[in-house]
Image (cartoon, rainbow, N blue to C red; front, side):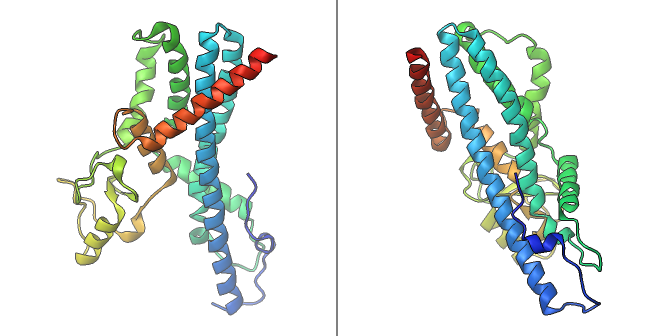
Length: 277
């Protein structure tokens, strides 16, 4: 994915030591705007990839029912490649938002590609969501397996169980501690980067403003809340979406169901095309 940062930033040089000159202020503003735009584009791509994975899973199920294992294998290989790109794009979406804060003007040209790569490495190093890729691949394999082996454990389930619990462990609380609303129903979820607890954005921000250096409202949590350390990272929305996916009977899983329905419709169309051939 190409960066949409303004080209002038990649060859920027500071002429003399002018402190916070209007030019530097303008560059910082443009950088922040470009970072927001690039991050939003990456997050949109992540959602599109997620929809594509759902369609590929539905199509693989239809091929398995039709007794076409070669087609299933081709789709599985494609899913492996797409999932790798999916996770990389999610890391990029998160890292790009941090670039304006890491940017330091100097007399030397700024290598923004190197700066972005460094932030991506930081996100990968601190993220607790490294199990996303393995979980998505397992979901694909499990859907295919259930066509003929529903209710039976997949081969290697004992090893896979360790992978499945990694994403579950990243969701530390199932309800906002202030509103008691289930996190799967939150329109604006945010997470504290220190204790990793999740809240409804407006209530937790109001809580911080009313108190001086308040502790996390989750009982027994000693973390001191800071506005700058509470935000919605890219992986939070994916974790919540996967939690919804694991509870298909939940009344608030409409979005996931819509995506699944769309995937099944697309799968049927592709199957018809394949049979015509």
